[in-house]
Amino acid sequence: MWTVTVGLTCLLAMLPEQSGKISIENPRLLYGVPGLPRASNKFAHGDTFNLAFDIKGVKSDAEGKVSYSLLTEVMVDGRLEFKHETKDIEAIDSLGGNVLPGFTQLNIGLDQPDGKYSVKVTATEKKTKATASIVQEFILTKAELGIVRIRTTADRDEKVPTAIFSTGEDLWLNLSIVGFARDKAKQPNLKITMEILDSNGKPTVQKPPVAEISKDVAPELDLLPLQFYISLNRAGKFTIKLKVVDQISGKNSSVDIPLEVSNAK
Image (cartoon, rainbow, N blue to C red; front, side, top):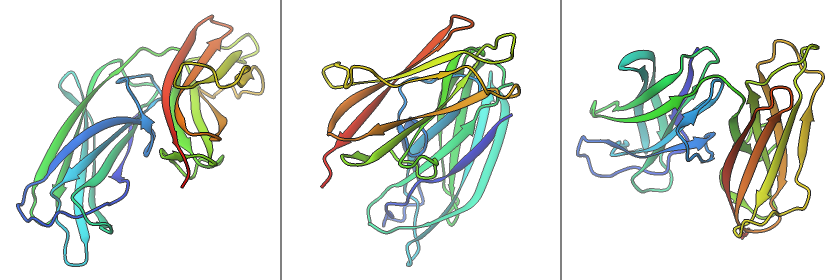
């Protein structure tokens, strides 16, 4: 089953020209919205597809109000698999400029067929009826051990998503494990490691945090949630290396995530 969220992350500006044309530019895959950059377009069952983009040319009225709609269509092998339309999205411009950051977010079900998918997003400006579309492809691989639903938040309760980091702040890295095996007692046996490397490829700590999960997991649970805490004590560019080892099946999976921390001002 697919579920979708679409909308505006934040409205930065209006475009004063009234050409009646809009465009969608700068598409980018992310880990969450807002979120860190995602380099791969390969997804696992149970993962979340996050596509951010910029809508240019949408007009605002005298009060700075902007109104438009977003249509998300998911296709596989040229066949429409899922469609969702959100109408009358409204926002207020505050800073002046010419770009509206938007997003679409798809929760990929555990029962979706493998294959090559295309996600088409169409924006329609309410007043002029001007439209623009963009297409992003992704590959859904066979069900197996994987690290999915990665997202960064400023709080442990996952209520404050963030992708801009400064020294002195706290960062919670949230994720889920999917495709794990179970033993005769219906329990998994997983070892999850989070290692952080600096810009020279050197580990920031000698002994990185490790989570081991082998008990108290409900039999019906297919997605196993987990989070790691990161203290942003210095500025720089880093790489977060996540690795999960299934000690029952012998399988493993890993993900590298870029992290940049700036000096607080």
